[in-house]
Image (cartoon, rainbow, N blue to C red; front, side):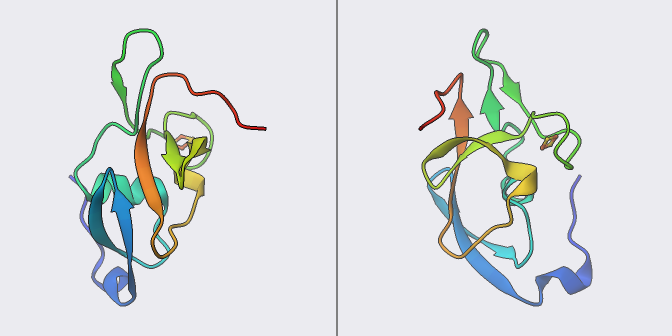
Length: 98
Ligand code: FES
């Protein structure tokens, strides 16, 4: 379903998605990195536990909430990946850290 354009793989970096080390193109968002790994659900709902996936990829729908570098409730579609970044599926409701 998702395929890379030929020129987007020129520069890559390594991130950890759900505990798996993967190489992604420079400039990708965390949500795109997760989709590239074949992970369709970036979070589960607080009530039913149903998996939810990024929808708008532009910061509007909040379906892409995920845990990035241990910080919950991050909009994965708005966060550009960085070398060594830890990206994890968010399980249910998470409290915001102060
Ligand atoms: S996918 Fe809609 S806000 Fe991120």
